[in-house]
Length: 193
Image (cartoon, rainbow, N blue to C red; front, side, top):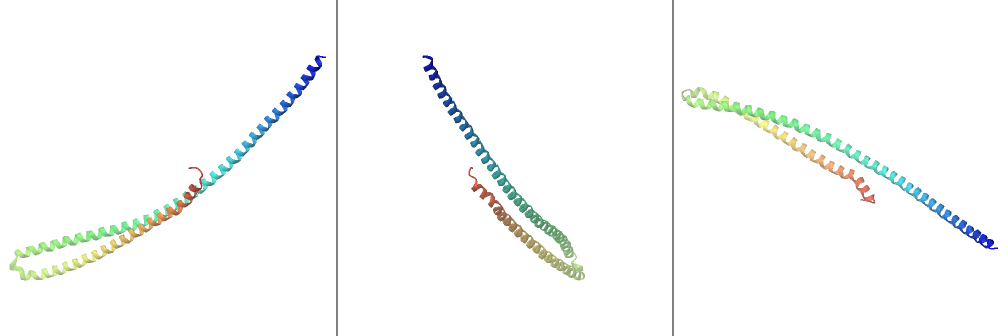
């Protein structure tokens, strides 16, 4: 008879242990399922983050492409203006060489005048040549005046080209602000610094 209560006690203990085992197994299964659910959520978040990152990188690359296109178009304009300025500078150098030649001619004429002072006896005959030399000097001075007018025109053209370059630089500044607007908007949308 003593064996019957121990057997019933063992049966009850086995039943309790079996129930505890089932509870532990169901708790373990719940923990594993919750871990799988958490991993699935984290995987979804990672996918969304990767997609958002790819979209942001695409927008950044598009804005950089627009910026580079704008810069290259502005550089070609500035290059054209600089080429025009270079041609004007060459023209000014040529005009200065002509002025230098005329100044040398004028010095020769003045040297002739100095030699005329030594020849006072031949002054009457030389007055005619002096008058012709003076008329040539006047035409040379007129030529110098014409060259100076051309130089003024070239300097005016250079000033206009510099103004055009200034406008192009201001346009580039405006384009840079406009192109950087999407990047600033993206920076504002970013939740982390």
